Length: 352
Ligand code: NAD
Ligand code: ZN
Ligand code: ZN
Image (tube, rainbow, N blue to C red; front, side, top):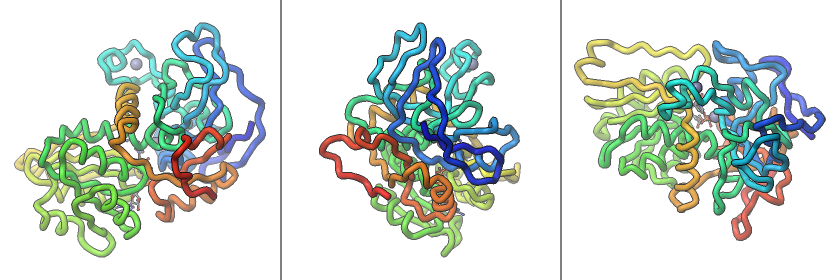
């Protein structure tokens, strides 16, 4: 099988031919159809964060594919079933967080495409219990971005406890942002989309943003304040400046939801203003398997649109460069065995 492998932080990934792995007890072998390129994969490839991924590494935590083989003892998944392998590759299942429905906070978790090999590969091994079933009616191509970008922004909007009529400012309309707009609207919020390129803002407007702000052309804090301020600001841009801008754009009672993870990112806020304005600062990390099931179910019900362009895995390094240049409409998705990717009747997405 072909896989994209990172052997050194900051160096290009190589395409390698590897032997097909065998599922152990409790695992499944999945023949991948699609895997999205999340900006987290770029952080992993660069070793950007305090906790480093393993090396050599096969990145990818938006993998979607068909189960081809079951390891011993697997009874809850079937050969031929479509499943998604998200960031949460495995958690302990026993700690207080796993037991009380916050498995995304488990301290003993293994992350796909970080601590274990992920979806930049034609096949991957997954823990059967954490391979989330993809319902009929959701294509592999749509399921891939939903598996991280979708679940993460769905959980971020839930964590912010947005109520109808509130204003949500979304900073960064990339893979995550284009879905954040839609979840904010689904809970009845008005949405202000902030980005630095006109193409992304045009997409935001098409996806239902009420207002768009180009942070390169205008001061986003002033622009948002002029629109009445934000009750919730969701930070999805990989730029240190946006954290403080998001904070400054908040109304009294506002919630700042931190999601993006720029290398060395830090946020300094004035205590007086935070207290007097009753502001909450929330860190939001992916979502649970149940959140992902809800994301898929909403998509199957026609409530969300996923914007993708497909790429061959051979173009992995060019694809990373495209994301960093900001020239990508929402999400790039690597596709394998492409015949299964598009549901009959769907318009094919732009292939490369
Ligand atoms: P992306 O590259 O697709 O999107 C980032 C967007 O931010 C782009 O549209 C870019 O034009 C925009 N941007 C850049 N500078 C800006 C600025 N100054 N103001 C406004 N917008 C600006 O990235 P993505 O895949 O959506 O991921 C975003 C971040 O979220 C990454 O840091 C990633 O690691 C992180 N992430 C966190 C979680 C989590 O659970 N917390 C999950 C997934 C991704
Ligand atoms: Zn646990
Ligand atoms: Zn991700």
